[in-house]
Amino acid sequence: MISPHGVGLVARQEFRTRLRTGRWKALMTAWFLAVNGLALFFRVALESTISSRDASLHMFGGVLLGVLVLTLLVTPALTAQSINGDRERGTLAALQITRLSPADIVVGKLAAAWGTGLLVLALTLPCVALPVLEGAVGAGRAAVTLAVVALLVGVVCALAQAWSALVARSITSVLLSYLTVFALLVGTPVLFALAVPLTSEKVTASRDHAYDREHPDRVWWLLAPNPVVVLADAAPEVPARRLPVTRYDSEGRPYTEMVRYNRRTDVLGELGREVRKLRAGDGRWPGDPEPGGPVWPYGLAFNVLLAGGALWTTVRRLRTPVRTLPSGVRLA
Image (cartoon, rainbow, N blue to C red):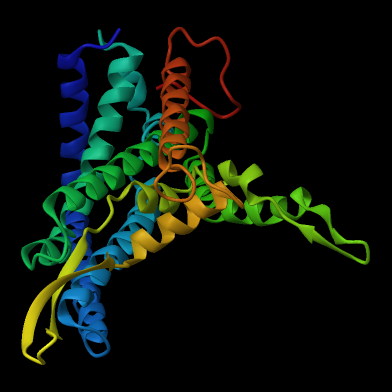
């Protein structure tokens, strides 16, 4: 049973513990300067080769992908020691003997870690908001992509907290948390690349000619849980643009006409379209305006279910009375 009051008490206590040290202020300041400074340098580099508006669009996609990866690398440090670290210090038992339920403790600690992760994400808003203010990216598109990043941060927080509850030593849980993030970011593309050759089949083009054809549409789901794929495919399309073009009538008199060009390409859009092409294979899915259907609902659902399972596992590990304990672990 979850009590909002109990969750709030645990979350506030966790926040006070995190903010009690001055290192957090220095780390947040360094993060803010590094991310926003690199984003501005990236923007200046882009403007040397393309127009300012297109540079702003590419800056948005590139910065968000970088922020996603960096935030997921920072997130395990927020929760990978939240359970076993308190157990090693003998402070977890003080919470367990109160009227707080195991769910209150787990959700409260997760809320504090997730809130800290959202604060880290919020510090990147200046470089994300710049393309929106310039009109290159719509506010709705920015809101959707930021919401997806925030949800993925929560997923990694839940997974790291589960490792903290399952493993006795904090250093081991930190290592396993980073391995989990590595598996999602790097392991899924590697697994997909290894699985694609297994889908190949012999196709006979003529009596004297045959070739092998691979079917990535049969294993596209291996890429779906990847956070980068989820973000890129979930980002709304950038609308097509209209540009003035000078034309001449039959008598040679010039006039200006607004011509609609194809959708502008950006990092997120291109990656999302490539993933959908992998899902479509050689054909189109019925009713889909683009080749292949969306991939992000499957990946996001998998990640959310994984986080839900991790949360359930953590709650079970904190139930009392405890019948068995790992060697060398104390309750108080």
